Image (tube, rainbow, N blue to C red; front, side, top):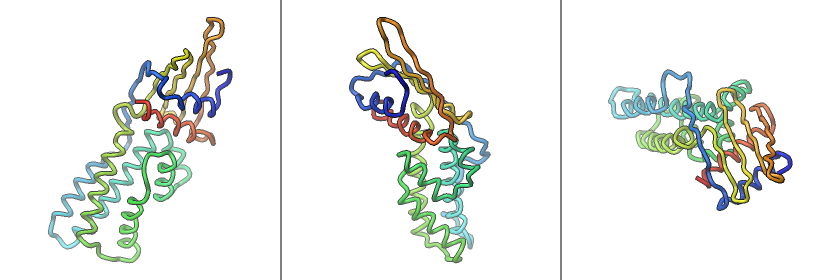
Length: 218
């Protein structure tokens, strides 16, 4: 690889069977949120099983908070939170962004959001069965997307192709940038090219999506 481009990276990753993981460093995702998504789920469960007058209203509200908190946690871990916050993206647009990266599917979350909007804008009392379904979906959603926030999800890795070349990929989420380098050998000499892509760059999400595709290798 004589230059570093998105296409060269995709070409490298397309040959999964010939790539070995030389090293992987994990990232512990830190957030400024005092209340975490799973705590909101516990609040929602408590409200659902209570008997006070507005328990279903509170339960659905906490379900929505749990999902929104998880969305923002994902955006932090992917190095997108600050840029998204600056753009003031709405809930549906955050969902669409993460869907485009292959992190989530928006269909079920839109159903929950519709129920929440009915409560907020049309003052319709939610049914207990709808709240139960929403809680189940939110619980599954958080459990599924937690895989992008732990274990081998985010951090840095070094991959080596059987032919001898390779690349290193580091997602520095606090700085909201991706640092990449690829290398090959010419006449026994290691040639390395380094590149940084910031969250505000138009190609950031394309490189991020390529990084997330490493699940197919691991």
